[in-house]
Image (cartoon, rainbow, N blue to C red):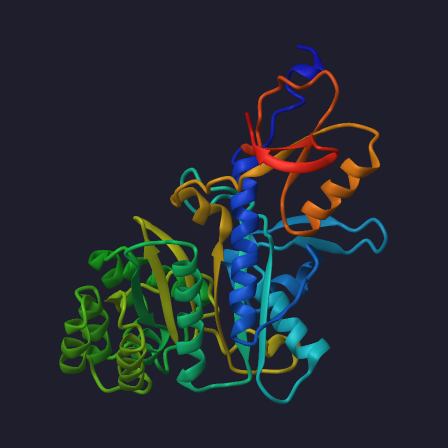
Length: 389
């Protein structure tokens, strides 16, 4: 088979972004960055690759498995292509900004995954996110959720629903129990899958380290999902162990700050990277999960500054796939001539924000990809805009 016959093919679940979709993604990128800036967030641009230990320290096995690795020919050290931007932003906050007060940071750039996190998803998401460092109060969690909702509403997503949980509930039920990271991950997976038999098997394997009260609470979590009544029921049936009551109160307050959207709870679901330490939320719209966030206070500890942190992220490519196509902005068609007056008219229109497409000689009948509804025409010695004939 000739080499050229497959040279145009891309790896599985990696794809080019063509003009119409790229326009939509870029419009959303600008919209979200402007929305974040209106809240006081500053843009940062971390590199696509770093030393592997910097990318992965403290983030758990799940992110390690998602990270492409390569050897730096300059230093011989192993590098990683980022699979998530949050560890990088935590490093920037800890080592480069080194502020004593609150830092609000946002970013937008590609990440790479060794495997897609769900069927038919891309392995090269375009991740937008916003993060708050330096405030341990629930106000930061609330602001992160409000900003995520404002971004999605501005993008035109309808019928939003927020699903909430809190990592402190499971942590409280397992307080004092020493667990391997792999065992804890299996417990989280069993809870998320509502797999009672697997959960019982995992807890039984801890040789009585989990009290009967806590074991019953873990089993109860499997039924604690639904609307706001879930929190009322949880206060009745869950033991008052450290962190559990506080988590339920924070979830109540977080839900009260999202009055214009539907709110649900799944107290057993702690999906996501391993660094969540408090509230977590996922926002759904048009039948898909569109954003995920929460509190992750330990993310900067490995960089020497264990600052409180909260935020969210979303994939612009995933978002565009569930939105209606963006209508193309109408533009102006102009002839290609060596005419100073024509060049001046085109420059003036472009400075005013218009799109002017010049037609090369011999291509007057080419398909119009830019939806030109007007044209520049010479009339009375002046170049003027008129409806296209």
